[in-house]
Amino acid sequence: MDMNQVSEHVVDPAIAPVVDANAPQAQEKQLTQSQVNKIVQHEKSKLEEKYQRELAALQQQRTQSDASTSSSAQNPADTEEASYQKMRNRFVAELEENQRQAVQVQREAAARQTVDAYVSKMAQGKDAYADFEEITKEFDPAAFPQLAAFSAQLDNTADIIYELASNPSKLVTLDTLALRNPRQAQAELLKLSKSIAANKEAKSNADKRYTPAPLARLQPSKVSGSNGKLEIRDLRMQPWLKG
Image 1: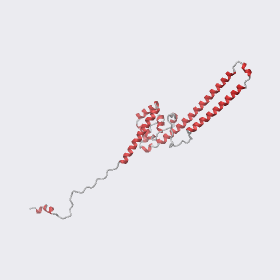
Image 2: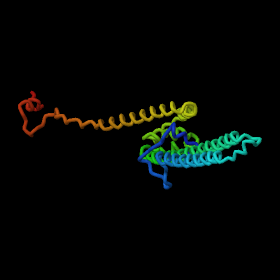
Image 3: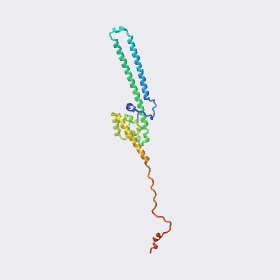
Image 4: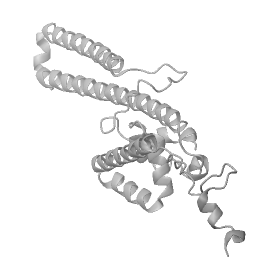
């Protein structure tokens, strides 16, 4: 049950954010969303400052232009506009690259959290089902990355994967839905999660209500006891008294 490849296919964190406070943290420090935002804002500020410095330098160059350049073949205004546009395009390209890198950092952090949550919750299945490892050994989370990621968000991940691994047709149906409509697949997994939880709770309550039937009460014997003395009724039954 290897999750090493899931991070390469993890779903967009904007669609499926995975934040599990109970999941064990990875050895590598993970960036929070606020930290990612600070990095993005810091880099954006640096680029804007650079842009403003270059713009100021360009304006100063225009101010200090020699009047004699006005007689040159090329219009100074055109030269300035071309320089301005080139600088602006470079600034936009650098800003977009910065944002792309920030999104990549966010995706990688979300992928690590997904893997940690999945592995931690799947380990609980061994205590819940005697045949858990046997049933789920063929389930490859890397082959169903979206289902694995969605399931990792729910409390009873092990129950869900056990159910899907036990029912290949249901697994294929939900996987197809996850590819076509991720949000609907999430909704269906949530329904499955609630159904499993409700069934387990009902079974637990039924087990608690069940008590063994009490032993039957002893009934008094219909055979009359004897103290060794013959009564009149007994004497009349003796053959030696019958003529």
